[in-house]
Length: 406
View 1 (cartoon, one colour):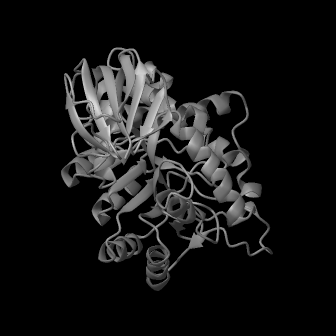
View 2 (spheres, rainbow, N blue to C red; view 1 turned 90 degrees about the horizontal axis):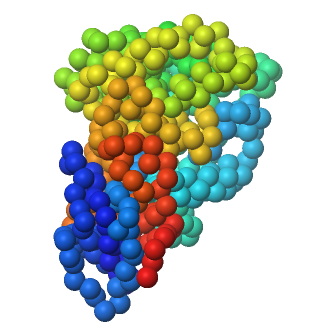
View 3 (tube, helix red, strand yellow; view 1 turned 45 degrees about the vertical axis):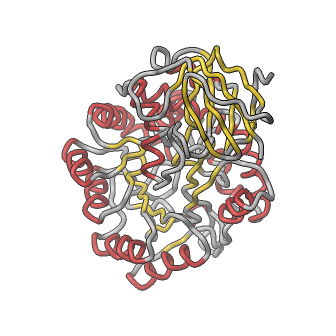
């Protein structure tokens, strides 16, 4: 069993409102076994000098798409499941170098289950990568955000969408996800921006349809995440009892009050909006997104300010895959620019994200927890931009990116 003593300059434990330190962390095997001003030194322990760094729990991104590429979505969806899984593995391992030790993948456009296979390969030790929780597919009504058939001619029946239009079909899709290993159910109850033929301002499930989906998932013990845009879509999802609102592009004050009362999580994917604004201004936004995003971008920015000013539970999520994973770390800065305090942004990627995912062993630095630990130069409470400079990454007691080992 490997052991490490991490000498930390400053410490963010994932739950406190301030940094502490200097401190030391003893890691034995895959767990933190001691934290204090000075810890014991097992005979086989290696010391890692992070005395010029702020040490934090590993970051958690609760909304990624490892097997989707928005830059070429129509063509990319036609690739084999194996090709998607292999590329997803490479992306996940590279993303971990930025400090993301846990990811929730929010759906693939594939008839098979490539993200489930990828998760299982990592869990078994066959390959190395971040912890994964997955919703294998995006369950959608016809003409909803998850219906990608509009990319192709009507003569082609290409099975890249999980479509249902009545209660029986909805139940069958949820049960299929459970049968073949999904951790989460992902659905869409409004249109989106990158999909053809739908509109983020319109609700695409009827109330009874979304209620059936959530009830079926609940009976199987599965939480539900819903892609949503229009304020009425947010309210519908809250009434149905989903666990997280993804994007919530056009959420209003009433929906935020409802979310707070329900104890619901919001994953606002704020950097995605900045990416889309840049693409709009540079005339590189996909044609099917231009008219919708041109109409809505001001309201999206205002809704993000409302989210930041509220006291709902905000979890870190990026929608990477819809834009480059190398930009995912910029979500911290986007959240602070929208009005979150730096410490709330850090908690969004640590303890709050872990709570959303029902993962009690990650997201905090405490004795007995998984040794998912990152370090960065500077003080993230004074300058959130230092989160983009992570240069030490440990996941489960193994160092994946290291400095200062002595």
